[in-house]
Image (cartoon, rainbow, N blue to C red; front, top):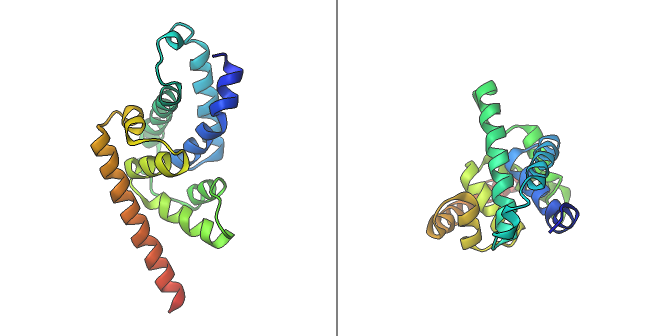
Length: 166
């Protein structure tokens, strides 16, 4: 598969994944560019890749994690902030802007590992087996993170909904 085909097939999904993981459209673009640079050097690896989708997500995840480690070293904190919420809201499709904002805020508050699994499952339609390969965990761990993440999302959205009604 050449880079153009790879980008056409996975580019948008990878970008959405990165925005949700990093909370920044600009950072997502930078990391995606770095990942495609890596893909250009993997000519031999492509011959042995059995699941291209899982492979490209794993490479992008690794790039994002390297970036996050550098950012943490600089900032010493990764608390959700308005820019993170705005970046996530930019790629979420909801019935209205208010719903998108609430979902983005709730997603941003999830622990990184749960947000990642929820995002891959819900927004990218991946199986737990694919998610497990990408995140380097067992399928059961991926499923647990998904359940816990959805539970926290539900509670967060119910609290927000309850506040608005009172």
